[in-house]
Image (cartoon, rainbow, N blue to C red; front, side, top):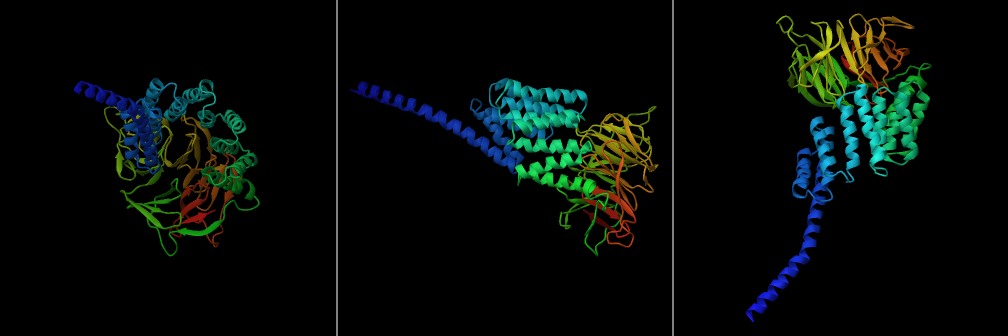
Length: 497
């Protein structure tokens, strides 16, 4: 009797265990999915540490779940877009391609591989490798949601590589094949930037208006409005009217004053940054002071490839005005030359281009300050600007502006005197999103075309009129191409729209 009961108990227990097995497996799959979504939520709120914990948990606890590949893709994307750890991101991509080669994330892994190539440099080789990776997506994974993304990034790689015709053709193909894809709004932006850079402002404005009509209330529509405003000022408002008008705003608002200003800049969120002897003050879009960074006598402001502030000092560079970057020049005849830094910018691949008044040149360093070589031989640099294509504009003490390609070769020189203009006392140089070159003189602003360096318009304000430009000393542009000019006559930054 006892044996019969024991046997019956074992059979019931086994049946319960067997019945529970699918439930447990289903529960693990659900937990994996919930953990992945938790990580994504943290990522959206920029709580990166917790996001990474959740993605790692999916890989460690549920490596065979249907979302393990998604977690690995999220980590690779985070390392590329947030950490800018190209080697780490590429390692994750290779792991995904090895372990989950048939998953739905494999196609986007190819997109990431191309983006990593492009982030590594803008040389023809880097651009070719990136485009090849993007083009493989449609061939290997036709019908994948990653296809329009790959088409967009291929077009953008061509644009950033200076291959304007190829870029426009690729963007147009995406817009035709996937007219409602979110990536099409990005493609129309890329097409407009390429057309505007090539002097085709009306066609560029048409593309921008298509974004606003077909993708209203999106981030791309807001960007399109800003870009349209830039083109309207330069090509429609001018030359019959002044390209800019004084907005009536000054920062700080009167009767406030700014003292000992060395430079100004506008960040990606359109906050104004003002460098003075004691550090950097930040002002919000409404003109209210929002931040303060203590830094010893910065002489210029710039940004790294992620848009983070860099302060330029005579002795070197500081990240966020705080962390020094030790610039190590090579020894010459046993002696390490002392640098006297006048300006610096960072390329898209993270290299620093540093103008040194002592050794009469512009030199390349990696992001940690290690010397990489000479970029260009140039004496007495007063100001530098860099655009999205890694082209560099250099204002010199000889009152000329030299335009360099990403390889350090001179593309164009804007001399002190040219057709319909004279640079009397230039103080600053800047680029807009289309690559127009802005040169701020003491009492005038001159804008030159992106290619060819032809004078497009000159902006002045009469001496006794509101917003008069009489003693400008620094210049910055925001995302809508509004001008911010520090004039020592008023000791304030005047805003022109």
